[in-house]
Image: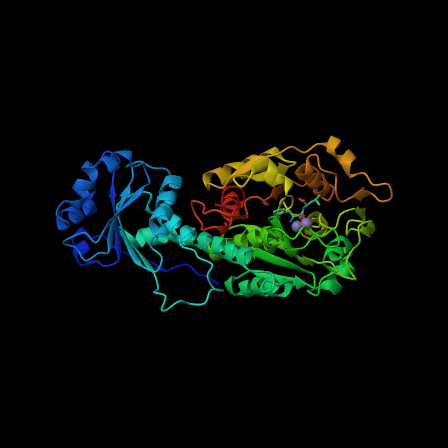
Length: 491
Ligand code: BES
Ligand code: MN
Ligand code: ZN
């Protein structure tokens, strides 16, 4: 597993730049004014920064850009990273700048001369988020140097305290990315459950429900998805009790299909390897629970994930099979590749029956159709409750995580009518993401505020994002953490 590079907070001393090695970042405003550390570095380098500011290139620089001056004369550093930053900047701009700074600094020492900058905590969070690589399956090439990040501040102790909860969230994001990036022969249902159980060490209560427990509970739709696999189906329950004793919890529910072959409705070979990320919803739930526990959130939150593998075999569910859900409704499984909803419907029902939650949010890499609709920029947001939904959209926006509301509506239910059972599991091509959400809504009790997040397009992407290298993004951990802080946390 990758872990956060330790960040050291030290006193701000511009004169000390003379002895520094590795990379040193200093700040300059877009109109070319240098802060104290930049002036100091400019003197040491005999005017290198001033010459940069006078150059044509600098005129084109945008806020947040990093311009690196390699091996400046008169200094020990390998590079001076000149960060172009306006004096007033938003938290998101500060994060993006931090992410850009750290992007080129893997395995190096990076010292950021933050001074008294007021968004230093967000800048630090941006560094922590981007400081990620999933390389534990690559053979080591030579001695990989350990990187180090140092933040020099006029009030290092205060800054360190302000960063602690943010770095807890970054750790949650990294956990989600590790889970999503991990191949399916490593991250089996059993290994996923083990990694969740490990979080007992940070104060979460964890239970693993095994197949015999799930049979007793009547979770037949969930079990029907995993029955073709050698890996046992499981449901993991994580409880964080940081709030008032009697406060109803928020329930987070995740789709954890560790690999989705499609089952008997087998997917085409091209691109099937991507289905190693089909446990993305469960990955976000685990990462969010980690973040909440690490920062000791003053809220009650329960995370439930359905862990299964969708494989074809002699025992696999056939198209046309009819199964009964825990709720009691029967489902005709027209297409075994529409398996995520079969997993979620039982876990959603169990979550409501057992925990009487104040709200339910499910996350799932549920439909290819959401990628057609929204691409890789926004997750699809479906909800039966405007208040909760708007609070979530606001949280996602302030965390720079794309989210876009989609409609629900009775009319779509027509598409789910079955000739022989209470419903079928697919509604045809039109509005594929909406009919999937309609299916889930049948398992949400009337008075329970609910959000369904279809994260198929955002959980893992093939290009670098602002905060992550290509692959798993960790999308959602920060928005959910923010929502908990804004709506569910006691003062
Ligand atoms: N896990 C897939 C959805 C998916 C597609 C996630 C692409 C990430 C990237 C899901 O289980 C699935 O196969 N959905 C089908 C549903 C269809 C059979 C109704 C789909 O979207 O094609
Ligand atoms: Mn599928
Ligand atoms: Zn799937």
